[in-house]
Amino acid sequence: MTASASGSTPHMATYDRIGRGYRHVRRPDPRLADLIHQALAGARTVVNVGAGAGSYEPADREVTAVDPSQVMLDQHPGSRKVRAGAESLPFADGAFGAAMAVMTVHHWPDLRRGLAELRRVAHRQVVFTWDPQHLPELWLIEEYLPEIRQLEHARFTPLSAVVEALGAHTVLPFPIPHDFTDGFQIAHWRRPQSYLDPVVRAASSTFAQLPASVVEPAIARLREDLASGAWHRRHADLLTRDSVDYGYRLLVAGPAQGPTGAGVDVRARSAGG
Image 1 (cartoon, rainbow, N blue to C red):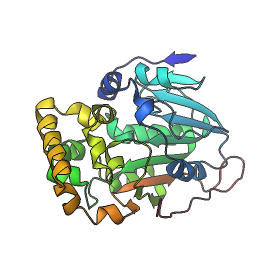
Image 2 (cartoon, rainbow, N blue to C red):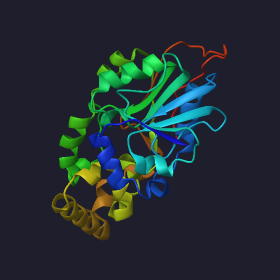
Image 3 (cartoon, rainbow, N blue to C red):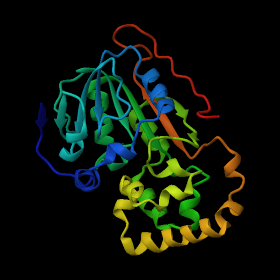
Protein backbone atom coordinates (compact mmCIF):
# COMPACT_ATOMS: atom_id res chain seq x y z
CA MET A 1 0.00 0.00 0.00
CA THR A 2 1.18 3.50 -0.81
CA ALA A 3 0.61 6.23 1.75
CA SER A 4 0.55 9.81 0.52
CA ALA A 5 1.61 13.17 1.86
CA SER A 6 0.47 16.31 0.07
CA GLY A 7 2.81 18.67 -1.70
CA SER A 8 4.57 19.03 -5.05
CA THR A 9 8.24 19.56 -5.81
CA PRO A 10 10.38 20.07 -8.94
CA HIS A 11 11.90 16.66 -8.20
CA MET A 12 8.45 15.08 -8.39
CA ALA A 13 7.65 16.85 -11.65
CA THR A 14 10.96 15.80 -13.22
CA TYR A 15 10.59 12.14 -12.33
CA ASP A 16 6.91 12.03 -13.21
CA ARG A 17 8.14 12.97 -16.69
CA ILE A 18 11.25 10.79 -17.06
CA GLY A 19 10.40 7.99 -14.67
CA ARG A 20 8.59 5.61 -17.02
CA GLY A 21 10.95 2.83 -18.02
CA TYR A 22 13.53 4.07 -15.50
CA ARG A 23 14.20 0.61 -14.06
CA HIS A 24 15.31 -0.75 -17.44
CA VAL A 25 18.25 1.69 -17.69
CA ARG A 26 19.02 2.36 -14.04
CA ARG A 27 20.01 -1.14 -12.92
CA PRO A 28 21.73 -1.24 -9.51
CA ASP A 29 25.45 -1.92 -9.72
CA PRO A 30 26.52 -4.74 -7.36
CA ARG A 31 29.77 -3.00 -6.35
CA LEU A 32 28.01 0.14 -5.22
CA ALA A 33 25.28 -1.98 -3.62
CA ASP A 34 27.91 -3.82 -1.58
CA LEU A 35 29.40 -0.56 -0.30
CA ILE A 36 25.97 0.81 0.67
CA HIS A 37 24.90 -2.41 2.34
CA GLN A 38 28.06 -2.47 4.44
CA ALA A 39 27.21 1.04 5.63
CA LEU A 40 23.72 -0.16 6.60
CA ALA A 41 25.01 -3.16 8.56
CA GLY A 42 23.21 -3.81 11.82
CA ALA A 43 20.13 -1.74 10.98
CA ARG A 44 17.02 -3.93 10.89
CA THR A 45 14.76 -1.12 9.62
CA VAL A 46 15.72 1.29 6.83
CA VAL A 47 13.95 4.27 5.28
CA ASN A 48 15.01 4.98 1.69
CA VAL A 49 14.38 8.67 1.02
CA GLY A 50 14.13 9.58 -2.65
CA ALA A 51 13.74 5.85 -3.21
CA GLY A 52 12.69 5.94 -6.84
CA ALA A 53 12.33 2.39 -8.11
CA GLY A 54 14.13 0.93 -5.10
CA SER A 55 17.73 0.69 -6.26
CA TYR A 56 20.28 -0.39 -3.64
CA GLU A 57 17.77 -1.31 -0.98
CA PRO A 58 18.94 -4.32 1.07
CA ALA A 59 16.68 -7.30 0.50
CA ASP A 60 17.18 -8.67 4.01
CA ARG A 61 15.90 -5.60 5.92
CA GLU A 62 12.51 -4.01 6.50
CA VAL A 63 12.63 -1.06 4.08
CA THR A 64 10.18 1.82 3.80
CA ALA A 65 10.42 3.70 0.50
CA VAL A 66 9.73 7.44 0.36
CA ASP A 67 9.48 9.44 -2.86
CA PRO A 68 7.47 12.49 -4.01
CA SER A 69 6.83 10.96 -7.45
CA GLN A 70 3.96 8.52 -7.84
CA VAL A 71 5.41 7.40 -11.19
CA MET A 72 8.55 6.25 -9.40
CA LEU A 73 6.71 4.63 -6.51
CA ASP A 74 4.56 2.69 -8.98
CA GLN A 75 7.76 1.04 -10.23
CA HIS A 76 8.96 0.24 -6.72
CA PRO A 77 8.52 -3.46 -5.89
CA GLY A 78 8.19 -3.00 -2.12
CA SER A 79 5.06 -3.07 0.03
CA ARG A 80 5.96 -0.14 2.33
CA LYS A 81 5.76 3.01 0.21
CA VAL A 82 5.09 6.60 1.22
CA ARG A 83 4.67 9.53 -1.12
CA ALA A 84 6.38 12.46 0.58
CA GLY A 85 9.24 14.92 0.26
CA ALA A 86 12.49 14.59 2.19
CA GLU A 87 11.89 17.85 4.04
CA SER A 88 8.81 16.56 5.86
CA LEU A 89 9.07 12.87 6.63
CA PRO A 90 5.88 11.52 8.27
CA PHE A 91 7.67 9.36 10.85
CA ALA A 92 8.44 9.57 14.56
CA ASP A 93 11.86 10.52 15.88
CA GLY A 94 14.25 7.57 15.72
CA ALA A 95 11.73 5.38 13.89
CA PHE A 96 14.39 3.61 11.82
CA GLY A 97 17.75 2.01 12.38
CA ALA A 98 19.13 3.75 9.29
CA ALA A 99 18.17 6.17 6.54
CA MET A 100 19.59 5.92 3.02
CA ALA A 101 19.53 8.45 0.17
CA VAL A 102 21.15 7.53 -3.16
CA MET A 103 21.75 10.20 -5.82
CA THR A 104 18.78 12.23 -4.64
CA VAL A 105 19.86 15.04 -2.27
CA HIS A 106 20.56 17.37 -5.22
CA HIS A 107 16.86 17.25 -6.06
CA TRP A 108 15.68 18.32 -2.61
CA PRO A 109 14.33 21.91 -2.49
CA ASP A 110 15.78 22.40 1.00
CA LEU A 111 18.90 20.26 1.41
CA ARG A 112 19.64 21.14 5.04
CA ARG A 113 16.08 20.53 6.14
CA GLY A 114 16.04 17.20 4.32
CA LEU A 115 19.30 16.07 5.90
CA ALA A 116 18.01 17.18 9.30
CA GLU A 117 14.97 14.98 8.73
CA LEU A 118 17.23 12.00 7.96
CA ARG A 119 18.99 12.60 11.26
CA ARG A 120 15.69 12.96 13.10
CA VAL A 121 14.01 9.76 11.91
CA ALA A 122 17.00 7.39 11.85
CA HIS A 123 19.93 6.48 14.07
CA ARG A 124 22.35 6.27 11.14
CA GLN A 125 22.43 8.08 7.79
CA VAL A 126 23.96 6.78 4.54
CA VAL A 127 24.07 9.20 1.59
CA PHE A 128 25.54 8.64 -1.87
CA THR A 129 26.15 11.86 -3.79
CA TRP A 130 28.54 13.76 -6.05
CA ASP A 131 30.96 16.60 -5.39
CA PRO A 132 30.58 19.34 -8.04
CA GLN A 133 34.02 20.73 -7.15
CA HIS A 134 35.83 17.50 -8.02
CA LEU A 135 38.08 17.23 -11.06
CA PRO A 136 38.33 15.73 -13.63
CA GLU A 137 34.88 16.20 -15.05
CA LEU A 138 33.27 13.96 -17.63
CA TRP A 139 34.53 14.56 -21.19
CA LEU A 140 30.92 14.86 -22.38
CA ILE A 141 30.64 18.14 -20.49
CA GLU A 142 33.94 19.65 -21.54
CA GLU A 143 33.72 18.75 -25.23
CA TYR A 144 30.05 18.55 -26.12
CA LEU A 145 27.61 19.81 -23.50
CA PRO A 146 29.11 22.51 -21.25
CA GLU A 147 25.50 23.45 -20.47
CA ILE A 148 25.46 20.43 -18.15
CA ARG A 149 28.11 22.09 -15.98
CA GLN A 150 25.92 25.08 -15.19
CA LEU A 151 22.91 22.89 -14.51
CA GLU A 152 24.79 20.44 -12.27
CA HIS A 153 26.57 23.12 -10.29
CA ALA A 154 23.24 24.80 -9.64
CA ARG A 155 21.74 21.52 -8.37
CA PHE A 156 24.58 19.96 -6.39
CA THR A 157 25.86 21.43 -3.14
CA PRO A 158 29.64 21.20 -2.56
CA LEU A 159 30.46 18.00 -0.74
CA SER A 160 31.97 19.81 2.23
CA ALA A 161 28.63 21.50 2.94
CA VAL A 162 26.74 18.19 2.73
CA VAL A 163 29.25 16.53 5.07
CA GLU A 164 28.86 19.37 7.57
CA ALA A 165 25.06 19.41 7.46
CA LEU A 166 24.83 15.64 7.79
CA GLY A 167 27.49 15.41 10.49
CA ALA A 168 29.19 12.66 8.48
CA HIS A 169 32.12 10.91 10.13
CA THR A 170 33.03 8.82 7.05
CA VAL A 171 33.50 9.91 3.43
CA LEU A 172 34.32 7.10 1.00
CA PRO A 173 35.25 7.55 -2.67
CA PHE A 174 33.56 5.38 -5.26
CA PRO A 175 35.48 5.35 -8.56
CA ILE A 176 33.04 4.57 -11.38
CA PRO A 177 33.80 1.21 -13.05
CA HIS A 178 33.90 1.11 -16.85
CA ASP A 179 31.06 -1.42 -16.87
CA PHE A 180 28.92 0.33 -14.25
CA THR A 181 25.35 -0.90 -14.69
CA ASP A 182 23.44 2.01 -13.16
CA GLY A 183 22.87 4.21 -16.18
CA PHE A 184 23.04 7.68 -14.69
CA GLN A 185 24.98 10.31 -16.58
CA ILE A 186 28.54 9.35 -15.62
CA ALA A 187 28.08 5.61 -16.19
CA HIS A 188 29.08 5.62 -19.85
CA TRP A 189 32.44 7.39 -19.57
CA ARG A 190 34.14 4.52 -21.49
CA ARG A 191 31.09 3.67 -23.61
CA PRO A 192 30.50 6.91 -25.53
CA GLN A 193 28.13 5.31 -28.02
CA SER A 194 25.62 4.88 -25.19
CA TYR A 195 24.95 8.63 -25.15
CA LEU A 196 23.62 8.33 -28.70
CA ASP A 197 20.68 6.28 -27.40
CA PRO A 198 17.65 8.47 -26.55
CA VAL A 199 16.41 5.81 -24.11
CA VAL A 200 19.65 6.10 -22.12
CA ARG A 201 19.45 9.89 -22.16
CA ALA A 202 15.80 9.81 -21.09
CA ALA A 203 16.77 8.09 -17.82
CA SER A 204 18.99 11.03 -16.83
CA SER A 205 17.42 14.01 -15.07
CA THR A 206 20.17 16.24 -16.51
CA PHE A 207 19.35 15.43 -20.12
CA ALA A 208 15.64 15.68 -19.32
CA GLN A 209 16.06 19.30 -18.21
CA LEU A 210 18.05 20.45 -21.24
CA PRO A 211 16.17 21.54 -24.38
CA ALA A 212 16.42 19.42 -27.50
CA SER A 213 17.89 22.43 -29.31
CA VAL A 214 20.95 22.07 -27.05
CA VAL A 215 21.20 18.29 -26.76
CA GLU A 216 20.62 17.19 -30.34
CA PRO A 217 23.42 19.19 -32.03
CA ALA A 218 25.85 18.04 -29.32
CA ILE A 219 24.91 14.40 -29.82
CA ALA A 220 25.26 14.85 -33.57
CA ARG A 221 28.85 16.07 -33.05
CA LEU A 222 29.57 13.10 -30.82
CA ARG A 223 28.16 10.73 -33.43
CA GLU A 224 30.45 12.27 -36.06
CA ASP A 225 33.50 12.02 -33.79
CA LEU A 226 32.78 8.37 -33.06
CA ALA A 227 32.35 7.59 -36.75
CA SER A 228 35.60 9.35 -37.70
CA GLY A 229 37.59 7.93 -34.79
CA ALA A 230 38.32 11.41 -33.41
CA TRP A 231 36.83 10.58 -30.01
CA HIS A 232 38.91 7.42 -29.68
CA ARG A 233 42.10 9.27 -30.60
CA ARG A 234 41.44 11.96 -27.97
CA HIS A 235 40.56 9.47 -25.25
CA ALA A 236 42.83 6.52 -25.91
CA ASP A 237 43.98 6.70 -22.28
CA LEU A 238 40.43 6.20 -20.98
CA LEU A 239 40.05 3.01 -22.97
CA THR A 240 42.79 1.37 -20.89
CA ARG A 241 41.30 2.26 -17.51
CA ASP A 242 39.03 0.10 -15.38
CA SER A 243 37.61 2.93 -13.26
CA VAL A 244 37.82 6.69 -12.82
CA ASP A 245 37.20 8.82 -9.73
CA TYR A 246 34.70 11.42 -10.92
CA GLY A 247 33.84 12.69 -7.43
CA TYR A 248 31.14 10.27 -6.26
CA ARG A 249 31.17 9.75 -2.51
CA LEU A 250 29.38 7.67 0.13
CA LEU A 251 28.79 9.58 3.36
CA VAL A 252 28.03 7.85 6.65
CA ALA A 253 26.77 9.64 9.78
CA GLY A 254 25.47 8.50 13.14
CA PRO A 255 26.82 5.93 15.59
CA ALA A 256 29.42 3.40 14.50
CA GLN A 257 27.12 0.66 15.80
CA GLY A 258 23.52 -0.01 14.88
CA PRO A 259 20.69 -0.63 17.34
CA THR A 260 21.53 -4.37 17.31
CA GLY A 261 25.09 -3.65 18.45
CA ALA A 262 26.51 -4.89 15.15
CA GLY A 263 29.45 -2.84 13.98
CA VAL A 264 29.42 -0.95 10.70
CA ASP A 265 32.27 -2.22 8.50
CA VAL A 266 32.63 0.09 5.53
CA ARG A 267 35.90 -0.02 3.63
CA ALA A 268 37.02 2.26 0.83
CA ARG A 269 38.42 0.44 -2.15
CA SER A 270 38.83 0.90 -5.87
CA ALA A 271 35.65 -0.26 -7.53
CA GLY A 272 36.25 -2.21 -10.71
CA GLY A 273 40.00 -1.66 -10.47
